[in-house]
Length: 318
Image 1 (cartoon, helix red, strand yellow):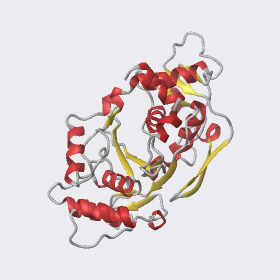
Image 2 (tube, helix red, strand yellow; image 1 turned 135 degrees about the vertical axis):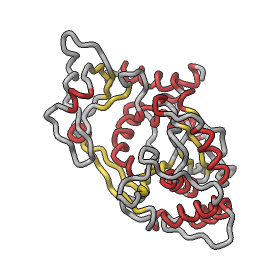
Image 3 (tube, helix red, strand yellow; image 1 turned 90 degrees about the vertical axis):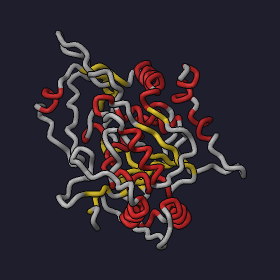
Image 4 (cartoon, one colour; image 1 turned 120 degrees about the vertical axis):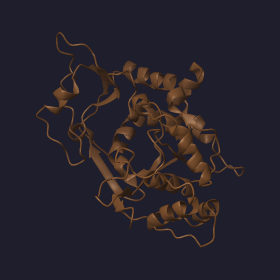
């Protein structure tokens, strides 16, 4: 990406968003599916793909491959093949985070110029050993050790985003009102990691703005990340999407289905059944006899966010 395009990310977001209009001049609801290529697509990921697809008018695909140590060989091809087999259609070529480093750097430098980020010399072990206890959101807030400057003899390891002791809340279309006091529950969070990789929170905010995403439909495991993303959007002068967090699919052990716990890949021999099962999980039952694409089209026409279970987790066998 050239530098002019990168600057659009942080300064001309409104122009990008307004480009997503229908022929009648109305703004289009733009959604996205953003898998990480750490393994093949499993049922939990398929639920996220289906929910985001049927709840928007324009669906974009983003491959979040910025965390290179976690990327699995051939995982991207496997994910794309599964989506194609399930007859998803994306309106633009996939966006790869690995090709967006200049854009993240541009946004980071803007925050740096504004005095909103600072270097941190703390190790993970030191943070884990701090006296700050884990909060209800599962976070162990950063105690602010380096907020006033790195201690003598230390070198910068990561860079953190400053937060304040105020509630950041939003109205989730599924989960209802959600708010978080960033200082008390999260603390100053990492934007640039010790290994030189930009943090998820920064990358996702920059990319949602660049792609003109108006509605974010994703799993409830990311609900607690949303206040951080809103904080960044406000700091960068970006518009805030509408958020909806559907239940996360869990296995028989109650744990989230994930590539890390070896969740089974979507069966490419039965894509129709896989899509139907995902829609049923979201409390939408398509008519019998439809191909995968037909089921998705039916769901787009009959989608009702109010029917999605208002819980954070739900058994994949339910």
